[in-house]
Image (cartoon, rainbow, N blue to C red):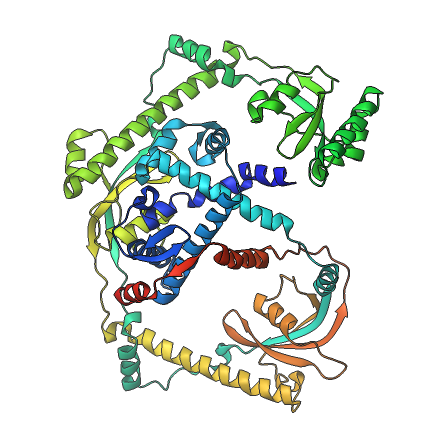
Length: 628
């Protein structure tokens, strides 16, 4: 089981980690990975010291990220952001030190294979060293530091996966969960819509003027901006690549293997785990299995009976088809690829026990002739050269952008006259449109260029093989509208506000009457102005009703044999009243997996604080808080 857990790091965990892989460098600074910093220590975990400057840098970046994605929504307070930054860093370091102490490892060969399989660094399903190098250059991250950080993140993920896999739920907890999952409640609800209380007129000029003065920020034109930009795309460079027949044939001679289907082998195996067995018991178990194999017993049947790998035992130890390049364990590769069809290997020792393999089938290598793949080869060769040209262009242009600053586009016009310099139309800085529709470009524009921190963006790769370089060409500042320009909007806002207040008052009044039993829902809505929705019996995953109505219906105390119970809810931002009149056990549903892994992970982190001494310099943190 532990072997399975550790090997999972080569699958879905790797793809999750890569989305965050450059963040520590941006947030904490590269100097942390080389062990030097002059700033005072604010947080220490074991022997690792984190300076106030590193925390401040992380806070600043985190705040920018939140602002870029907030789209005008209210920002959390600075102390909440700072608290989360410290909590995240503390959790990462505790997991890293725990993984080291308990000897979790990622071998060099495994690390290289995992990096090569990351989709961000692949072209047409193959690892692209140029793309990998370009990524590191664009982020200004040394290769060794990147790989050490990735290794550390993978080890943390291994440790977390062990917690998740070992999480368990008591039988009584599962039974109660399944019972609640299938529960149904009889529900009606009414939405107290503000439209029922709209009363146009009655808003004087003085009232409107006063409202306008109190809410001036709502009546401003948006910040408009035009960007000057250069766009480099691999796809645009393919047609520029001229190749002849001789070059295509040479490409086939050197890369033809990539157009062949390698030999595939399908094997079965039996795992004899060393967990809870001493050497003598292991030897006895292996002798018993080997004896039955020698006597002609069906290998798949033996796998079902004896294998300790629960994931494959039911299928007779069946493994997916594999080529030699798919197998990283040298002993396993030698065993499987040294067998003839039907043969069984000697026991192969591993970290967690012994494995016995049977080769079930060999699918021979399938070659494709030059004529069969000629067109594919030509296209692949052109694309490969276009990628090389793209990487070279982007690297050179990125260097110019950092060296030349405000002269960047002037230098580009002289040095690269064939690359057009374009200007966007006017864009609303608050909307995701045009160049700002690319999330990465939008983040750079809002947090660096419009903030005045940098003159141009540097290389921003918005998708694989598609890079932008841009700067602000012209901006149109936000303008305060005069009262006369927005008077109609102000009056409409006042009328809508009064209607919303009246709806909230009616909502509370009805809720009080219903809860005291003074009136029924039918009596209150008898005039037909408000629609009562009779949903009947619903389950907690009913997607046809407003989400908050369903949530409130199931967190409200279930009614006994007496009258219905009533609770406040929201329907599209408007106040609603939910009536729950009965509860029953519905049809058995397939419940979602129940896991307490999150709770147990938090408990493990708390216990690690006692294992690795954690020290917070509250004076330094106070200074940092005051400086934000």
